[in-house]
Length: 265
Image (cartoon, rainbow, N blue to C red; front, top):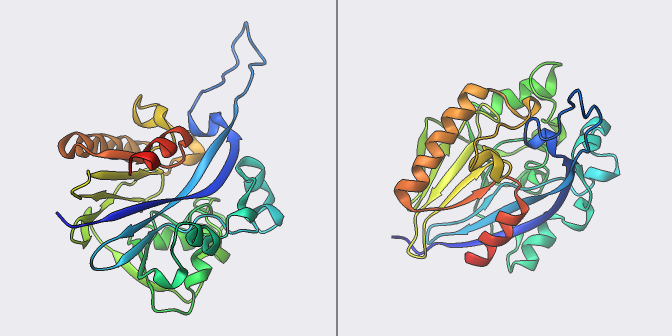
């Protein structure tokens, strides 16, 4: 298997009501009409995938001015990236021993604003930016009309970028790194299966925000799902890949799992 090094970048914390992430986490009943809500902390992360062929950046995180008026107010009220200013992409790469100039390619799991905010760093360059065929048009449709999903923000991705469109359900990026189409959260969500001597890793990403989604099959809130039917199908597919490849699984925003996986890599 190829010699592949993986480095997780901690891009800060988002604070949000757990009801968004785990459907029905706090539900009023006749005897408890005012249940206590869990306002929780979630991680934003990126990964550097260092292969013999190229150095790949997985996602780009939030724009550093997310909390200073860059993000639309309703979105920040729901998902507050409270320390985005302390986590510019170039700074977090530098802390991990990399430079923006070291990045040969970017893979976008999807184009929501907590994943696409650093794409500006690659505008006007020849660095290829991989995105799934089903994601790119839906992102523009959502950002440029009143339909679709409000989680796409055109200033994040409407740049002069070297888009490379990924087609189909499975696509080899480089030996040992296979891109996976996992629709549900968005139509073009991508994960990855990374095969390496040090242990296989499955990037599930926002197919499952937290352990309750992945391990227990508890759905995310309706606002985080483009298609519940596709989400359940993708979840079953991801779990099967985990079993067959004995892979370490990394989820979209689960802080405890992120910290555990980072220690294992």
